[in-house]
Image (tube, rainbow, N blue to C red; front, side, top):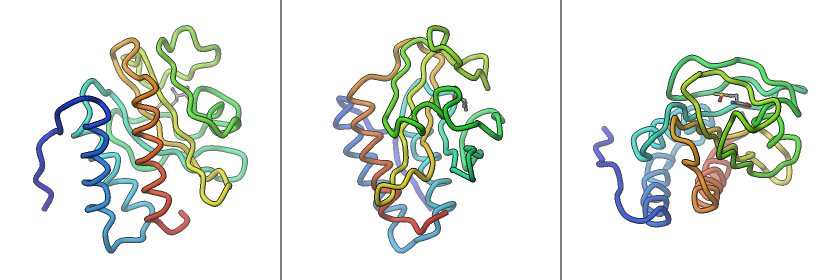
Length: 162
Ligand code: SME
């Protein structure tokens, strides 16, 4: 059983606490789907103002929906398409303060106003992305990028290839 409160403090403090909780959840478990499911649940519990948090995994030339929290979402996203496919193709985190200003943004949930997508890199190989959406414009910044990149790296290190 996992019984924890939503962490409080500055964003870096919140992400440090989430990283400790993630390490606890991953301990002794190498299954990437199970760890991704728990990480999406942890983010959903631990971060304010989200309407979606989850994973897409690279399958051939497409990203395919993985474990998530939020409303049902688009299943397949081509590399280079949308925020997810762009972050995957560039292999870099993309922060979108206003999704309506991002050309090609794919609206899975009409409530989304801002978004952050972090690529999952395992030994230099792009294996998927971690995607968070918010109903609040400008919800994500460079501190979220740093914190989520650290959590993505913990997931990669803790998990066998999915
Ligand atoms: N908005 C994303 C699609 C995935 S959903 O937000 C869950 C994009 O533009 O790639």
